[in-house]
Image (cartoon, rainbow, N blue to C red; front, side, top):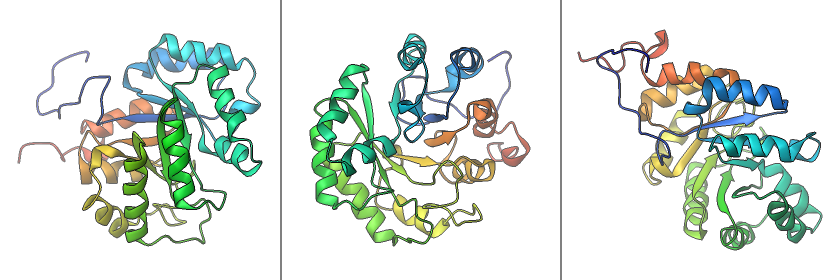
Amino acid sequence: MNYNLSQIPERFEKPRQKGLTMVMDKGLSLRQVEDFLEVAGSYTDLVKLGWATSYVTPNLKEKLAIYKSAGIPVYFGGTLFEAFYIRGEVDEYRRVLDQYGMEYAEISDGSVEMNSEVKCEYIRQLSQQVTVLSEVGSKDEAKIIPPYKWIKLMRMELEAGAWKVIGEAREGGNVGLFRSSGEVRQGLVEEILTEIPEESIIWEAPQKSQQVWFVKLVGANVNVGNIAPNEVISLETIRLGLRGDTFDHFLTK
């Protein structure tokens, strides 16, 4: 930090298991990636190339190399896995991971119907090749998954070998964990946390109000994802109680 300030919550040092900030790259240019890393690289733990943008991204290998040189793991969005799965081409997906030297992968079923046992088998297989993140929740706002099923699926996928499970929200933060208005399904989140360790979950929370809610509930070292590159510094101030929304949250009363 640039100067001393008391009553600031402790943030774990990178590489960390808790307090992760996962950023969504929806199509940054090479120069934009460099600029982003100059400002926010030290606060970024993971980068997801959103949905299947890696299929159409120019200079993909060069982009991956820039992130790798900064020591930041990158993975392709879960929708890409689903695109290969629905075509019966998961073996080709695995070859793509090797082709691009990927060390992480996301397995999701937000846009396709997939038996939970089948998904867990893919997690087991892929975890022999890469570090797996698995996403739980549907991208269909009309599909409401009850809390007990969220818990069951998260537990199954962690036991199958997922490093972290991701709570679905899409890039807009208006499905899955959230209502269409962006409001958190508070009862759902609180019930999940009674059964699943907080450090095992990354909560997709692209909206500022959602980030504030999770920091207040879990603390400065909550894992959050789908953060826009230009919002990483803002998020860090929210985590540290240096923005109005959490200003007095960490102060000694």
